[in-house]
Image (tube, rainbow, N blue to C red; front, side, top):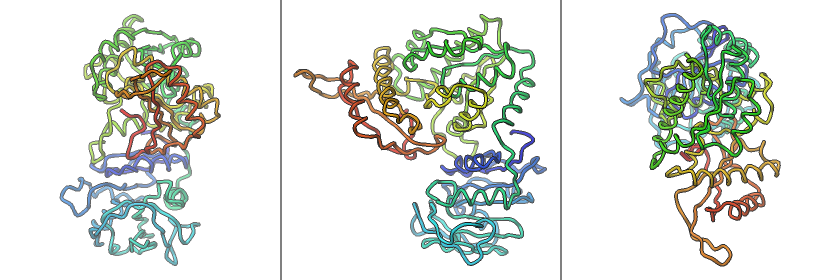
Length: 512
């Protein structure tokens, strides 16, 4: 928890949108944290707690399988907003009526406000589009509550108890499809909770510098610096906090982007940078491995082993710094509650249990766009800060099937061509992440009147704000054609290029 700031807590009941609630609140300058809904309520109210949000979730409040919840959370005298499942729980724990739906209401709906919709809907149009995703619904609001909005499929789409400062929404204001959702969240934070918006990157830097110095003392820290946004910002923040106590280690595991080793060495030389050539080690450990989770764990473990060996060479280090972000933690850990574990991130779920160093993760509470803002505040160049995300396991999880040096070289060259053409077309900054994937299949082709039987490359480009949801980017066909032509003609081993048009959810951004 970031101390000293106004705090809103979000209790997670397993909704795929919970992280978006946090992002929408952070965007308003209000610090919030996600907690598992199964956490027991503390004996005393957390310091500077301004409000509480009960998220959506996949279960029914009428089901025996519903997650455990400590009703003492509702005893805190702060405003409470229940969203979807959270609203139904508030009704169920009171004397309201929750009914099972005859069918699931999923997608866009038209919301109609009542004559006096209250502070939560202040300044909003009487009708607007919202995003529904529920099976059950509140058929009757609890005593003391009044219905303030409805939709065609939901007679109680929102209710409030203004005196007790309790509010419920059947729809999801946090998703962009709810066109007035941002205003609604702003109303809850500032008009109802009384927040002032005291969360900023400037204050975060000051607090983290103080925290890092207190944590580390006079001890040595090593940082895994890959050249990506997360590790670069982590290194810059640590260097500001502890200077020469930091040693950055760049591990060339043979799974990096084109020319990455040279560019990192040039830019971060003043950070006590050590460059380690570990390609043979990593590719040897990955030989014959095709399962993506196994790849991640192998890479995570061997990163640590390399770091420990390099730490010993510089006289020992007590701390390992990593660029772990909030979405990494969210996707890797189920919060002990009902949220599904999506995949292990190599720097969260793939670390060995017997690691000798302690972890320091100063970005663990931030989303990607916040990390970019932090990098700018720290003075990193825009080319570095605005780079597309690149996974810690590198090309290993963009090579479907076995990872070999030959396949790495093929994919690296294809990816470089794609990025080159995307930049030339002026599209790089419009795309949140672009990547090339090497598929474990071969197809027949014809080149120079001769039959070929070679691999397929898939190009994936998405738009997003935080990586938690993403839409495929509608690439100009002319640019796609140029990328495809160059890859097929210039990269030996690929004779077909396809374009991925799936969104997240249901797909993830990376293929593995």
